[in-house]
Image (cartoon, rainbow, N blue to C red; front, side, top):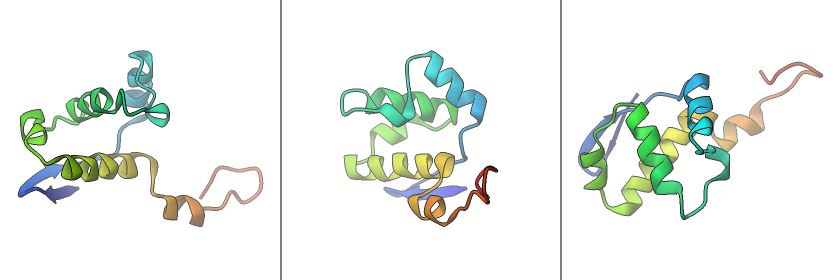
Amino acid sequence: MAFEIGGKSFDLRPLKRGEIRQLKKNGIVLHQLTIDNVDDAADAVFGILGLDLAAIDALEYPDFLKLWKEVLAESFGSRGEEKNSSTGGDGPPT
């Protein structure tokens, strides 16, 4: 998915399960980020996705945050998607 921000276009995709597991093995747990480690986590994820880190570093910080949130939404779904999913009993969300 192409995502345009700050006059630049970034080709985004959801992270794969194996990529998330590798990040965790490297000490980056995406659902436990703090202000102290979000930049390192974002750099690691953007690197996995093959994005141009120099172009991302040139973004204004609010635009960087929008890009980061979009990657997370692609990978984990948005709150609206989670809210509208159902488990149908004991099964996985649909």
